[in-house]
Amino acid sequence: MNKIKTPFLIKIISFFERLTSKPIIGGFSISDSMLQYILLGSKPKAVSIKLPPGIIREGKIIDAKQFAAVLKQFHGMIEPNDRGSSIPVVVSLPPGLVYTQSYQVPNVGRENLDESATLNLQMVSPISEDKSYMSYQVAEEMTEKYDLLGAVAERQAVDEIDVALQAANFSPVIFEFPGLALARTVAKAMGQNLGKEPSIIFQVSSDGLNLSIIRNGELYFDYFRSWISIQGNERQISRELFQTVTTQEIQKVLNFSLSRFRENITRIFLVAPGFEKDMQIFIQEKFGLTTVPFSVPSWSLTPHWYVVFGSALRGSMNRSKDNFITLSRISSRELFKEEQIIDFIVLWRNVLAGVFAIFLVLYGGIAYFLAKESVTTKQQLSIFTVSGQQKDLANLQKQAKDFNALVSTIKDVRASSEPWGLFFSRIAAVTKESNISIDRIESGSLETAISFWGHAPDNNTITLFRSNLSSQPDFSDINLSISSIRPLEDGSVSFQFSFKFVPEKDSVSK
Image (cartoon, rainbow, N blue to C red; front, side, top):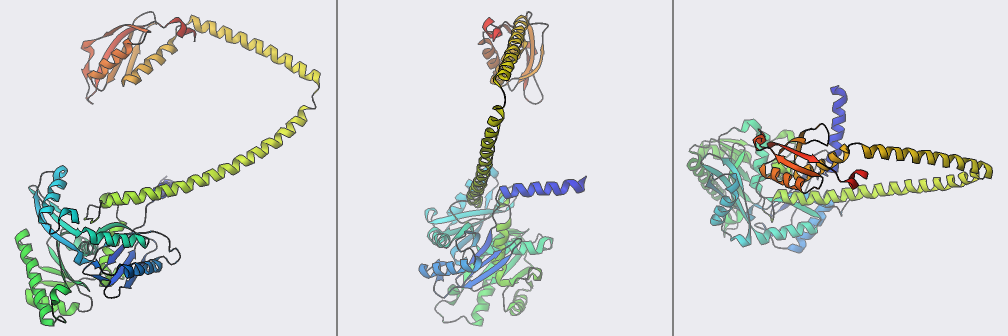
């Protein structure tokens, strides 16, 4: 039976999934020097394009016109055969655009968490609420408190990127930051091997240095230092300056971990394309920590793609499970619902148009067939003689007379019998109106009192039922047995009525 049933159920599930129109969402990464896109699923693709210098600086668009031109070119590289299509994406913003803050709030319950978390984030934010997008996610829930990670981005800068993407036929579903996407990639790749102890993710990218703390698969801390802030007025960054800054930033993260978790970090995941070996030796000698160059050969991706891959992972997950930071006007779930509703409407518009076309062809064929049959029938009727028609008419008149006599007999019998059908239709209407469930009805005939047992959601409903029953002219002598009112296990109340049913003559004759 299973071999027969399973494929059938799979087809049914697949059919309903198509009707609900589940969009495919790719990952999209923006940095000062590059745009990247990854789409997972049955037809995966990975596309990137370099940005000319000066278009984006520390996360902000400097040359909007040239940025728009690059976005249109990038769209054509992703969808060369459908340049007008909308491409839904989870966008990883430039790291210099986002400020993150780890903080704690008392455990006041999930229903009050949002208000408490938002208020505390507003207090530590370097940007005022009306000029920023703020969001948070739960890193860990404990009995006394919540560990939270908050993020803040300048509203105008995010809106400019959003407008530019939409103008180039990209549809941003979610905005996040690189540290969050990279932590998701590490957690996905390591799985159970990640362990519960805190680890550092140290990334060296074209934008600068990014340090994160991941624990129990969740991101607890994220910090970014741009090359511009390190270089200052110098023309280039020397090896000594780079090592000094690296030492300082790693020490800050270690101090944070010790103060927050009361335990030392022993492992660093290193994402430094091109000079992992030198960094690994330097960090191990300086701090004595296990430094692991992070790579996932099974994915066939170089470290340059790990951030955008993390965003693509978020795009492929169920939106009901997406409780991560979202730096936009509305949450990721609400954005996704908007996209899904639009796709659903378009899908069913096409379905209805197709059904209408099928019915139009079908009715046209039926009309042609009936017109042809009408001509054939008229030709066949012309064969019969007038005498034959008169004989058929006489037979029909006799049959009509017999039928009318039978109807009259049935009417007389019905008038002389007790109108139980009328009773049940009346009592059913009153119980339905009063939200009453019938359990049992007993009576020998309508001439004696009728006993009625039922149950209702509460005592007020019983009172309403009695009032509605009293308003019916056919019911009289209505008595409620107070002793019969008993609460039931499901919260409802059982009761017993007795009454008489004397239908009006006009009602019986109908």
